[in-house]
Length: 565
Image (cartoon, rainbow, N blue to C red; front, top):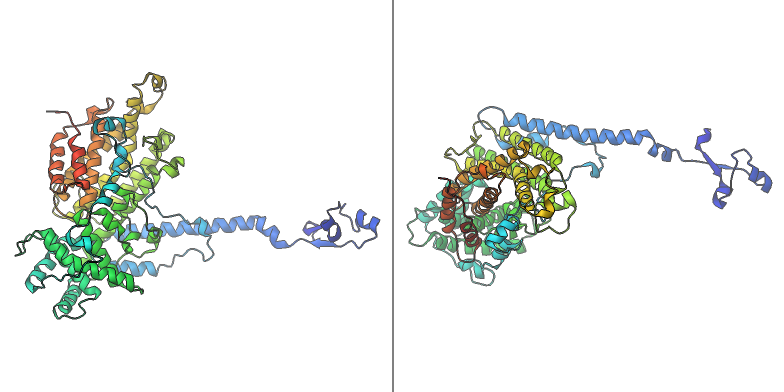
């Protein structure tokens, strides 16, 4: 037997007496005791040996190989023929994918999903904390817009949706067809949930007074409500919002009852929840939308990002959700747009997690009044590396869009709102990737005015016109301006992006104002007043008293830009 597998004699091991390793040992001879050595279990040796390390490395390699093949398949699929394939093909391929991680894979080796970080510093209100902006506009708490939305009462009939009576609207077939057509023309492309054939069958049941209090009735009424908001062709004299509420109130009342008493999984209830969330988004009510805990809670949500609202807790399950299927070939284009938008929203989460997460960058539990502190300890080399990698991923996403759907960069007019949304997302991501360089430059230039700080600025690349920093600042400025020129068309009408794009327009203008008032980079700012006036005109039409839009108008009005003419 291998002597390396032996330990002390049993008697002396328990009594902690010394042993000379002989047989019999000295202590046993002195005590006239049987000298019996205990064998050391071989599995303990193997655990600490190289075999366990090799096995662990093999499992890590399998995980990396799996991810690599999945990314490759996505890239190949997105660059195939100019005619889209059904998304159901992709779901089937994914489900039958032979690449699998080992069954005994250690869960700790898996990468966590990129979620919207709590207390992130990309909020528009973090720009209001800059001394220059604060001196101009005044003090605003970090959760200012959340407080505004929380105090805003529900509109009209919805204020008593829980205890009020269910008021049925007039079910005129001609009006219903008109409103449904408006829904499928304007709302459905942004979120294709069902086919027109499926909807017509539900509408026929409603007209025949079948299952009036069922979930399909809630879906039909929500469709009419959205159609009323988006259509100007109805024969009614009522305002679109008033007509929409007449359909949405009974829809929401039926939906709430189904949510409370239907305990089984139901795809129709999920579709009704998504329609209700879409209705609130079209009204520019992000908090009401976010409070609807739907399957959409697992999908990255603009309202949660911009309000930094509480999370539902089920967001991590989003990674396990299959890509939605295309039910009809006519919807393939809409589904491809939806998948591309979901991907860019995930990348935005990645940007927030990497550059704007105070907990991951500096382990701050409380945000500093100056948001720039989040990046100061990173240092320029690391910030350059992170931004370069994120920008590479952004360009990779852009190239992955099928060529027949890929939007041209810039400000050229686009006929499709879906293409316009993707382009707006692109420039928002590009802006956020490079914003730290601009805000660092603005902050250091402000600190340089202090005599106590002047001796620390000589070797600081953010306080000097270093070419690599100036290049990133220029990219940020260009992204802000291009974003504004593309977003003004979307905030001129109701859409699920109305509130989010309005907030981002305000943030872009504040970023440009800070740059114009910073000596090292103010020469990079062109004339901003024309686009500022357009943004204000768009925002004023939604600026109900004491609303977020009203507050955004007041803030943007106080930003005074130079006349470059």
